[in-house]
Length: 435
Ligand SMILES: C[S@@+](CC[C@H](N)C(=O)[O-])C[C@H]1O[C@@H](n2cnc3c(N)ncnc32)[C@H](O)[C@@H]1O
Image (cartoon, rainbow, N blue to C red; front, side, top):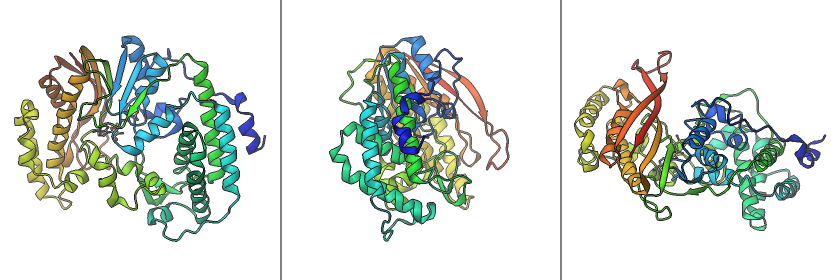
C-alpha cells in the first residue's frame, strides 16, 4: 500500500486498546506511549493511564479533577471509566495539546479528507525562505526538513479557518507531534532539546505526518468502539485559584501529579514546539509566555521573579510548615553562596510551597466534603539539602481543611549515584489525602 493509499485503508489498521483489567501499574508515562490517544504527544505525565483508570473505576466518583492536567492522562482515563472530569492546565501550549487529544470522538473521515487536502497543498511548494529563522530551529533540522516543516506551518495557517475547528486542532497536534521525530537533535530526559547532541533516527515531515494521522485515526476508531464518555473539559486555569466554571463542593476525586520542586522547567519542555509555531523567539520569552502562569518549581522561575525569601516565608498559608521550611530555605541560602551557579533554590522551595498551599486552599473550595485526593509526587534535594515534600504537602492539605493524609511509596530515586550531583536518597509515591 502506498503512503497516500494508507490514509484510505485506515479502518483495517485499528490498534488494540489495552485491556483495563490488566494489572494496572502505577507506572510512568512510558507505559502511556503504548496506549491509544495517550501516545499522541510525549510528555512527562507522572503516572500511567491504566492506573488512573483503575482508580476511577474502583472509586466510582461522579466527578474527577486533575488540577495539573498536562497532556490529559487523567481526563482520558476518566472518560474511559465513565466519570465526568475536569482538568486545569495553565501552560497555554499544553492546554492546547490536551484539548486536541480530547477530540478523539470526531468523525475520522473528515480528518482523513482534510489531512489529504492539507498535504496536497503542502506539496505544491518545495522551498521556503529560511531568513529570520530562530537559531534553535536551524540547529535542530536539516535545511530540507525545516523548509518542509515551514511549508506545513504556512499551509496550516492558511487553511485552518476553512476547516472545522476540531479537525484543525487535530492537524495542529499532528504537526506539533512530528517536530521531535523530524529533528536530529537529541533530547534530555523528557522534552528538553539538546541541539548539540545527535540522535540516530530522524524522519522527514511528509511521511512522519502521514504516519501520525494514521495513528490518530486508528486510535480514534479504537476508542470510538468503546463505550466512553466524551465530555471531559480542559480549562486554561491556574490551580492556585478557584475556577468559576466548577460548582463549589462538587469534586469527589482529585487525581494528579503536580510539578515536583526539582528544578524541572515545564516552560522549557515545549521550547522547540513554541519556537516552531512562532509563539516565542528565544528561551528568554518563556518567562512571559509560560513560566509566569505555572507553579514555581524551577530556579530560573525564582530568579526571574526576583523573589525575596523573607516575603515568601511571611505568608500565613504556610504557617503549618513555617519552621521546618524556614530552616531548609535558610540552609539553601547559605549553601548557595558556596556554589558557582548560585542557583536560587532557597526562594524556589519557599515559592513552591506557597503555591501548593494556594492550590490546596483552592481545591478545598471545589472538593466535596469526604473527597479523595491523590498526588503523585517525589521528594527533592537541591544542592543536597533534603526537602520532605510529601510530608509538607500533607500538612498544607490538613491546614487547608482536609482531614488526613498517608503516603504510599512507589519507588526509590537517585540511588544509583552515577552522574548525580548529590547522594541524598529520594523516593516517589502517592500522597493520599482525604476529607
Ligand atoms: C507532572 S505534569 C502533569 C502531567 C499530567 N499528569 C499528564 O497527563 O500529562 C504537571 C503539569 O502541571 C502544569 N502546571 C504547572 N503549574 C500549574 C498551575 N499553576 N495550574 C495548572 N497547571 C499547572 C504544568 O504545565 C504541567 O503540565
